[in-house]
Length: 77
Image (cartoon, rainbow, N blue to C red):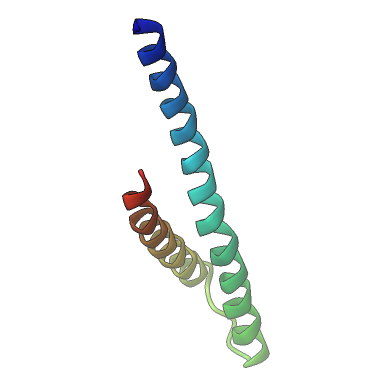
């Protein structure tokens, strides 16, 4: 009986690691894409955004997506 409980605990820890990895990928890929779009549009318009602006845009997008997706997946646990 104890072996089953330990096995479940280990499986839950493995699942949590994969879930965190998935959430990170889900947040970073679109954030990098849209940050690139903002940089291209700014450059095409003649006013290239600063590195701080681009980092802020990327961080805000990634944080929003990470939070929203983690809240959507929370009831599934």
